[in-house]
Length: 452
Image (cartoon, rainbow, N blue to C red; front, side):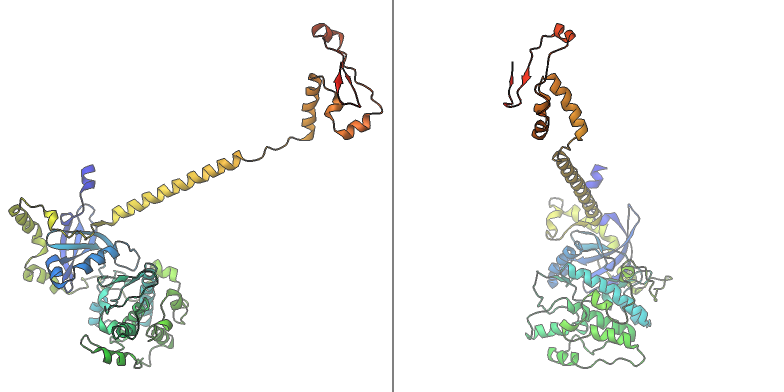
């Protein structure tokens, strides 16, 4: 059991089921963890391709970001590891497919569907802002649906984490979804941009979901100067769209970032979303109007054939391929061929560590509270006993010490009794005299001294 815990997560811990996605230099497949049976989506990128395209730093940065993030509307990272060929990221499996797939299949999204997606992704953007993260590539391809239809944001390859009170300034993103200030920054008309760029992209996605076309005609080859002119043109809103829905889009597609909706609170202030309970949104208690089909995988079926037939280094043959390479290089350590900066991550271990830290923190808090209460109790003043009990206690003491009762009383009492009492006779009784001889004592009322 101890040996098993020390083994780092690796490719052999997963069973490859089928391919479901493909990117510019990465692929995604469904995998099952052998020990738990849980299904995940495994994204893997070729290390050699990343190095040749200068994209290795982006993958390393993406894993660093994802390992620090967790939210209901993000595609969360569970494991990351590498071997001599590939870099792996194991994430939540969302079987509803990406939004681009459904738009290409001419799914008609209602205003209600679009509004809920805006709320869900708005919640994710609000969270990212608390983590000082700008996604910079929000588009239908990077929005995945789960089996119930809830939206999740994925692909943080070009995301960035801002320093406090700083701006981003690189021209990053997909042109049709990029905010005006990103292009203005590239033209050196503004110093930089910040979190509102993601809310602009969300507005473009919302418009495209409702109409199946984008609000601005832009392409990857469109010149920057022309893009600036296009983004300043008025957006056409179909007459059959509700005024409340158009109002929401206009506030998301505002050219000026300072006047654009850029927070969940501002979303909630719009007439369309004012009745929405955002806590219920966060809990996924609001049922989406569109639910992805369950009778088939919501992805291109050709991807699996491509992996099996076209791919020169198919994933299902990796184990044999690496074993052959390692046997040919027995004298070299496989660890030396790995990327040192790439994080090996295990969310289960991280959750366990955080739970232990919380438990220790709770114990420390209880201990400090107990010590504080103990100090307070030890420093509490001793309460005085009632007068009656005090008098009862003093009387026998005075008798035992042969002290004048008048000396134990207050000065006021002495004054009142001075006329009637000249002295106090302390002559012992005959029985007491036989036992212990006691000298006769007089109390002088004027000098307060006791003499023989």
